[in-house]
Image 1 (cartoon, helix red, strand yellow):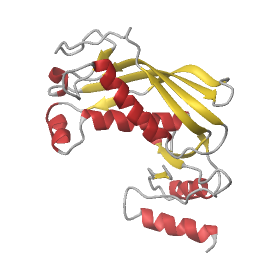
Image 2 (cartoon, one colour):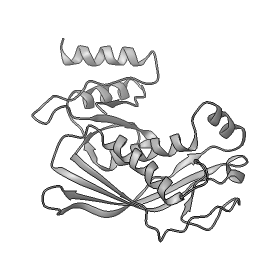
Image 3 (tube, rainbow, N blue to C red):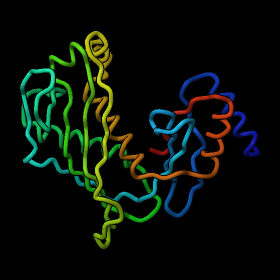
Length: 230
């Protein structure tokens, strides 16, 4: 089957739904190349941009410094670095560490192209909604971290340290209650967002079948949001 025919079949299939998979990248010695598409607001650019991982991630190290101030105040906007109500009462630093670890492992899973690296993430802000805010006006899950990418063999810094902002809209009132009932908890939302952001930060523009498919879909005014091989 020719590439043009494959692409046209993809576009026809996309007309039936909002989400679809693109063709995986060609396989090499390092295995499949994870690819995903960023659309509009997600990428900060108009149209569709197809990205591909730039590293082979050997390890992810997450740090939530104890110097960050945590607050349990049930006000609209506590003056603190860590505000988290998505788990029961407990050590908020440890809870945030578990969340970020889960997200970073999900976001880097399958990355197997480029130099082998260690990814270091140091949380500088994890300010989500209090009960009072979530069940009234809603707001923003404000998440920021310093990102450093090191060569796994030498420890040399390949990227960073640099600040990454991973803020995401947080539902409030009836919408928040509906999300909770549907299983889309605050924890789910922030893990999805952090995983998406780390994929973006460790990736660059892709080429080949996936990129061609995205361009044809864009010409057909079709929206793609996909993750292949992740």
